[in-house]
Length: 122
Image 1: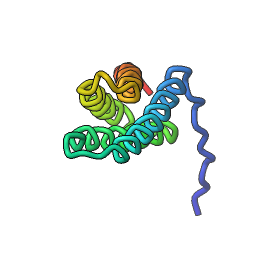
Image 2 (image 1 turned 60 degrees about the vertical axis):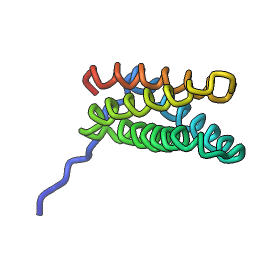
Image 3 (image 1 turned 60 degrees about the horizontal axis):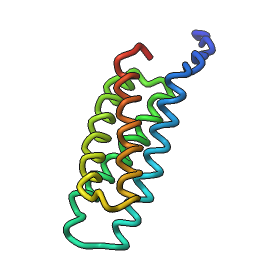
């Protein structure tokens, strides 16, 4: 029998903690915005809904991967940044909607933090 050594994870860096928080915040904003879009309906919002769904899922998964120190977290952060960029762009197509503008801002912030994390060593 081989003896297993206990595995301990390094504490998360401040930058990673901030990125996880930005991802989770963006996830929540996307979910709320999606709910609002579904209530107001309309086929014109379908591309926005798709972008919101993609961003919501990517931000949640990205945060999860960082928290468990996945070796794929760098790549996930880059993909998450791209999803956030697309979502921000989709939300910006409705500049008169305050909820959409808040969502676009949250997506932009998350994108910046994810790009910074992807460029650093996790």
